[in-house]
Length: 457
Image (cartoon, rainbow, N blue to C red; front, top):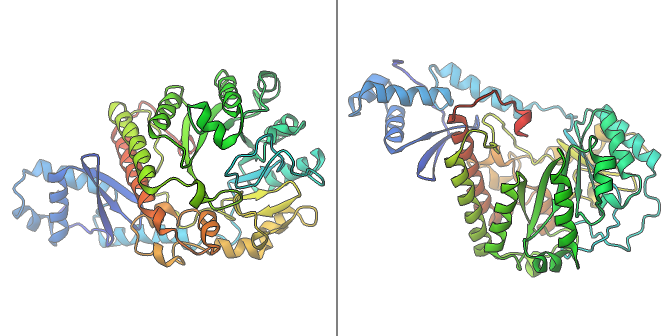
């Protein structure tokens, strides 16, 4: 047995689903312990040597050794002070020495701001009567896609408005795929036909995200428009009949009903569909004060969703997707660094939600994407907005997992890109705590085959 251990200087302990999570904050690793194991771990931290600690522990050496092995494996303890410091320095290096011009992972292409619906909370303020004059042509979008590929982007997301009302959308998705890009699209489903799915998207589109707010047509249609639920569910089925990965986004509003929403979640899970819950942002037509869900109602829904996920993980942790990975440290939301957005006029913005004049990085009709990405002052400024520059984030033990939360949501509510929506933090911490637990449970389960990081993204 090792006789001397060094422990991290910032360790947080959470209680989740009847187990304790021990979290090495600065390195972003964690492990699960029961009450006795946590007591042993905390006692080991109290004394200079394992031998000294053992004198105060009424447990056999096998039990103590098990705790030590788990702590070492999860980087909650180290055999030397040098190893502990090296672990922190590696983490800080990853955060502080990111290049001024990072390679983005994703590009959102807003194909049009016109839409066949007019959702009450649309952040893009899309609708049937939005002009398409001066929108990028097919040839111009192909040039954009080539530049996206040259920049090192791996995934392109076709969005809108409603991207599938463009007659050339199938051609552009196929072109992106021919460049070796991963192709995703976001749609309300209304313009999706079986002929389109089978004839143009199958083999070219990797993932589709459909917007569905409720199992009840009346609730969904009040948010999105008459018969929109029918067309969304029809599109969902079209895609479920193919190998294309299907996700569903749902936006919670003050007309969301808890039981109905949990039924929707179960319905989608049973069909292998990843379900993402979205909350209103004060952007575009979104008005939290008028349409937003109350804090208590939101908590009620979140607890129902987390209970469902907890039951699933406890029944079958093998094969359950881990939403968080240890050592995946982030101190930034990703806007202007990991992703960017191009609107139909060729304007480049840090993300799909920050289409505001003060965040305009440039226009592709005037400059190349590479030039904009390298030299835009708007992008450089946003890349410097990290958890180290957000005062409310500094004391939070989740800061290197959360990354400071969504800058666009904070800006929409306060018009300050450096603001923190403190009222959102309890819900976010609750979700992250659960995700850490699920990640740890998944890691503890015997895996039938190696799982790559790409598989979990």
